[in-house]
Structure formats: structure tokens, C-alpha cells
Length: 332
Image 1 (cartoon, rainbow, N blue to C red):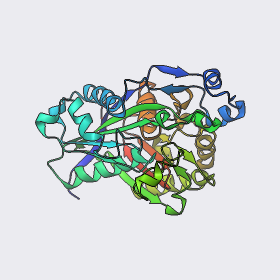
Image 2 (spheres, rainbow, N blue to C red; image 1 turned 90 degrees about the vertical axis):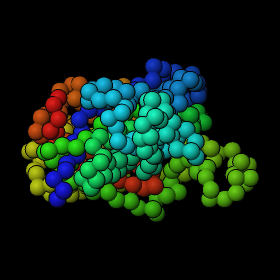
Image 3 (cartoon, rainbow, N blue to C red; image 1 turned 180 degrees about the vertical axis):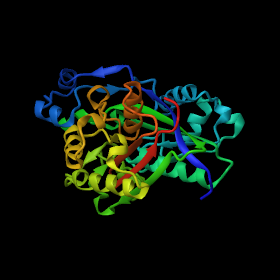
Image 4 (cartoon, helix red, strand yellow; image 1 turned 30 degrees about the vertical axis):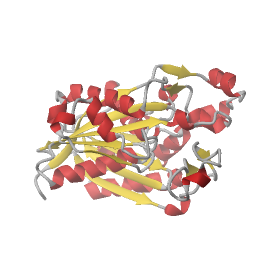
């Protein structure tokens, strides 16, 4: 052990101002959102970024809040990691633009993107914690998840109702006490072609531009219930690694895509609903941002307890899943 530990010391969010109701969605698309669909997903409204916002501007706004709450300035940050599958462009990455918006260019802060789709929040926490533990020069890492999926909708399917825009950020810092406890990541590439935005380098772009569906989010096949199956396994795995019991868990924060699945998993674990927190009812589904947004809201609602364990559980297309466990050691 290096004696260096990573802890989450602050959070920040950006929520776009445009609120879309089911009635607004029906007016735009001609499609009525099934009340049962709303009940099962838990998504009562969705947030849409105004035209002047981009993934980078939303990410920067969430980051500024996280920095302020941590009592840090951009010059205190040693690395910026942005997780998104709705980037500014295929290339260059979004993170350097965020760095510039935060006035970090003069400090030459390394900034890069990761794309584990909607599993980004957990993958970035695992990555950032490993970097802090392994290299003493990285003391503070700014981690941001951002989602601008409404830009990739065709507005012609009911399932598009769930997708929103937003950003969430955390500051991960060196700590004398173990914040990060354990993590488990997994992937199953046999699901790669089920769901996504399939514009890329897999065939010549001259051929791709002829397919009007490629630039848009495309649901090609329906996933089996992989979250119901693997989320409890992942949670138990990281708690076993950390040598802590369910009784030490303050909150389990999940990817905010389907409330019924979250509640079913909590029931399977024998935990009350009060031990989880959701924000999809007011923010919609914000993919790479949603776990950090839910964490921020849980802290605001005093649901995270000092010294207790918080478990983050994520899933994303590809197919990727993961869980990480942190003990909350920072002041609340």
C-alpha cells in the first residue's frame, strides 16, 4: 500500500433550465408517453439544454460548483477527466475544452476523455482513485460526467422520452484516510450492437452519410434484464472486497435509468428504499452525469452519513457495468 488514499471531497451539478413534460413531448412528437412507462422509469419530466449550451459548457458549470464546494481553484487541480458518450466531437476530446473554459490552460492541466458510456461515473472513480494511490503528484482530480443526448434524438419514438441533458462533477483528492475502498468493473461485448450512436470509423464515412439513422441514438435490440441480474452481484462483490457489511452502507447510488429496477435491487439486498436516492423524477435520465447528480442531491438532502459507506453502481451500453465503494471521510 502506498499510504495514499482517494476521497470524494465535493460535488457539483448543472441542470439545464428547459423542463419538458409528457405533454410537451406529445406536442413535439405526436406521441403520448404511456403512464406505465413513466411509473416504471420514474421519469416524470426531462431536461433539455438550450441551443447555446454544449457538453463542454455544461461540464464546466458543474465543475465550477464542485471546485467552489471543495474550496479549491482550478490551479489546485492536477488532472481533469471527462466522461461522456455525447462529446463535443469525435476528435478532439471534450476535456481540453472544459479545461480552457475553467481558465486552466495556463496551468497545462492534463485533460482527457473516457467513454464507458453511461458506466462512466463508476469507471472514472475507479480510474481516478488508482491514479491518486499510484502517483503522489496527483493530489486533486476533477472528474466530470456530462450528457447531451437530446441532441441525438429523432423525436419519433416513445423510448426517447427518458433522455435528458445535464452534468455532474466530483473532486477526488488525496486523503490520509481510505475513502475509496473497492471496485469491480465488467464488460460484455456481445451486446455491443444493441444500442448506441453508431456513427464512427467502422466503415467509410462516405457510406455512413447515406444512412440517415446513423447520427442518431438507435435502439436496435432490447437488452435482457442485466441490471436486475448483475447489480446485486456487483454490490456484494465490492462490499466483500472492502470487508464491510450492508449495515455500514449509508447510500447506494445507481444509474438513474429505471426506478423499478433500483427498487427491486434494493429489495433483493434486503435494504429499505431510504438507503438509495433518485433524481430521474426531476432531471430525467442523464447518463454519464446521473450518478454524480444523484450523489449531489443525496448530500443536499442529508442522506449521506459521515464515516459510512456509499456504493455507486453503473451500467452503460457496450455492455459495461461496475460498482465502487467509498467511505465518506470528507466534511459534509
